[in-house]
Image 1 (cartoon, rainbow, N blue to C red):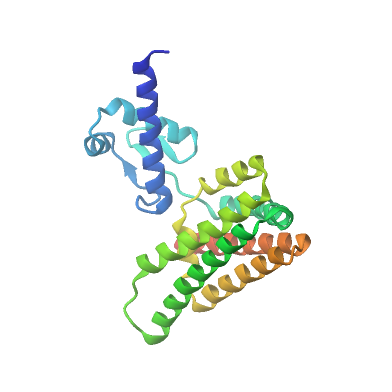
Image 2 (cartoon, rainbow, N blue to C red; image 1 turned 90 degrees about the horizontal axis):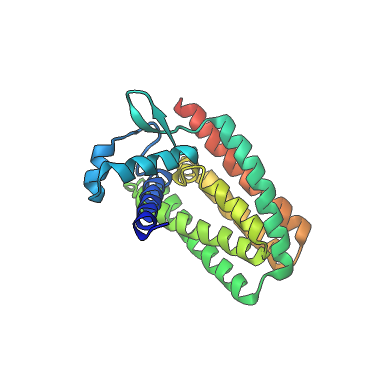
Length: 236
């Protein structure tokens, strides 16, 4: 394989990754049409690598190439969400169980730091709701998402199983990340319950209690999946 081919493949991969990240963050909504000409102009490339990137995303199930419409961001059905989160619940529950035996003091400290940021972001949002102040959803969402990602990622790393980590990461890449926050932020009660779920997971891991860590994590992920599925059903 020539250097030119390698460079071309790398460009296609980077384009596909960037477009997918925008879709998963919610920057590009479901059912949006992705125009090759617009993307090529934005990235300063020809249409060829953009077309190949979109084909790559089609293979990954992120977009659909429709006749006479081009690439369209694939919508997610409530049924698909429930199926995926059921699997995620078992995988992340296993990760929490394994983490109880392997978690280090440093990882526990990172979990506590993530939980503090997590709690602060949610409590700030709840206070805004109570005071009737103008909402600033992006600030709260970004803090919540960062803390939530750290919390789950540290647990998965502490589990020490690379195949398990890869399987969970694959499921995470299948759905827009902003959907969970969109579902939770509808209710102060839901936000508060989310804090408590994380507290119970962290407590079980800290006590080195494998069955409880697994069941609490699995219940937490299943609950999040149901909230997202209901959100999508209402949206329809």
